[in-house]
Length: 354
Ligand SMILES: Cc1cc2nc3c(=O)[nH]c(=O)nc-3n(C[C@H](O)[C@H](O)[C@H](O)COP(=O)(O)OP(=O)(O)OC[C@H]3O[C@@H](n4cnc5c(N)ncnc54)[C@H](O)[C@@H]3O)c2cc1C
Image (cartoon, rainbow, N blue to C red; front, side, top):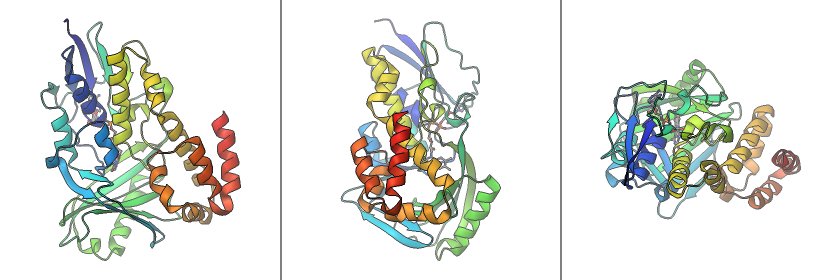
């Protein structure tokens, strides 16, 4: 059978996973272009929920820690603690994982390709993340530090620290008992976030004595997936964060990016529409709900923000964060959201009907 060319621009989770999905079929001649010297080098917390394994495998050698407990703090006090049977997810060695997905695929590294040229008749896939010039412009910024610590006891626990004065959160993701990734994301400048992160680390009993290995920052798209961006012209597709595939409330972008690649692989294999495949995954709806709530949280007073988080039923928090809800479960969840439930429900109902 004659082979068809696929040019993938960007070797992040979206590009690498698409290459992995397509390389199983001999009909594709794949070529990947990546600006950096290795895949997975852009700033990222490397945490993924276990559901990502339904899309692509994670080899054991790429798992830094298996996450079995999730803690959520508000203004320094523990709000929720979730112990998960088995695993909630993983902190992965992203460069190792993506290299595994790309094994056997020709990749040209250190190749910046702003023109995204591809031979006539080939499939062109833009997977360059937030640097795509046509990507949505609404962003939050995030800054992260890797710290060497003498002994981190709970390597199976990730923590999210909310502060009512910040629309965003701090995270602590352990890599080993001696290396921890700490970061903060929100609607602030990079220099403000660096200051916030530095005070957060100083206040922490263990992190404060850690040694900083590196500090990096990058922006994250915060407006959700844009339907119009996915298939701008025949044979050209946009996957991952370049199309806005990041959950706006959490900044979780790895799994949704891979979901768009799964949708595109399905479309190319079945001859169906890419946009319809994405729609079937429910991503437009869940991202829209996240975006609305983020808009509300930006507008309300800090005390109201704290109240919304406090009154959300604990067992729903994780599913909601991951976008695992339907219209019915969302309605039930909002009805239980304490004093703001009626107001939230009416805003959601009117916006979702648009
Ligand atoms: C500080 C921070 C922490 C985060 N933590 C998490 C987390 O813990 N979990 C999570 O799920 N999400 C996290 N995210 C979001 C997540 O990193 C991204 O949403 C996800 O990596 C997007 O995947 P992608 O493949 O679409 O794009 P990217 O990962 O951005 O990959 C795009 C690739 O394209 C390359 N590229 C760019 N321009 C070109 C070009 N012109 N030609 C060729 N190649 C090009 C880039 O070098 C890059 O390797 C975080 C983001 C930040 C900034």
